[in-house]
Image 1 (cartoon, helix red, strand yellow):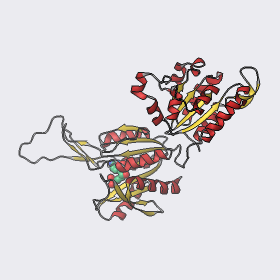
Image 2: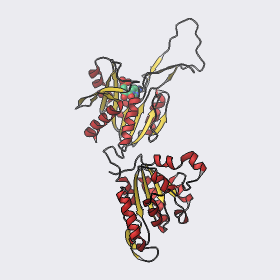
Image 3: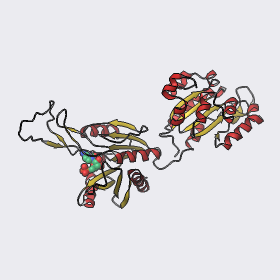
Image 4: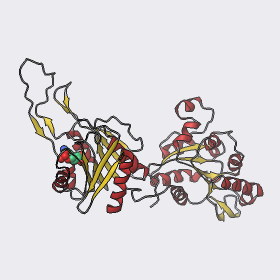
Length: 397
Ligand code: C5P
């Protein structure tokens, strides 16, 4: 399945009567999962308004190379870095000539020069203009630079002529953009991942937590996003950077993580419980800081609900992967967890050796399921995440 999940697309709209189809192209790109930002050329603005493209794309329309405000927020270099592909639809003869010449005289041509992203061009113009030697030479030049030309269709044209030059239908254009990206079995799948450490308050300044960094979970998120999945990330305390392409939801306590997961789990294909969830919370959290008085302080801890086990009990449960950090009888304990929690996969993490596991950059794990017991050798968490997902895809998708 081709999809544009997690992809950022710039749509360049230039001066052609078929610019009226641009909002529909934005919609079709969004339907396939893309974030779309529109660059309107001077000619394009004669046929379609900035307002309609802004309303549909839900993003500011960019059109002025010399806009100081835009340069402060997202100028041409930032736009070039942001995008995964640039689509020009409709592409006028003038815009095509401009790009073929490598000019940088407006925002669209400057962004194209500054970007390594795939370039797709959907010409739309009168058939005589389309068939002209100059236009065809320009297209050949662009093809030689690896641009993809979405060849116009034949039919009745706005000017009354009949022949080639009509803009291809928006859905077909969007599908051709999606084809530029490799699709995997995770493409279009919905994945919910928990990660990081939960924090259980004792009083307003003290808490119970653990050493989890969230790095393993984040490596899984990054790999899922790279493979085209749409990811919800429910995170506690982490010491790693979030991926801005996932839907990131912060929580503090185990109870908050439980509620967030349960409120978002419907419709998810895969649940990965990578968080180090506190097994207990403090029974009577104090509203004021506890004062020391020289005597022992006894805290009563009550068990937290097991998020993974409860997700596994859902009527329409996603495929569930849990993590088990163990220090002794590691395999036996992890197998017990697989069975007791009712999940499909447990990733066993032997934390008796402190070189591995939480808050470090490398890991060594065992992929456990009912039929599988596969060791994944010590490597960076990024590589381990990819190996976990490769086995997971082979076994479950
Ligand atoms: O039982 P244990 O805490 O060792 O299980 C670890 C696995 O269960 C991890 O995947 C963790 O994210 C998940 N878990 C959970 N909710 C809890 C405790 C653990 O989802 N309250």
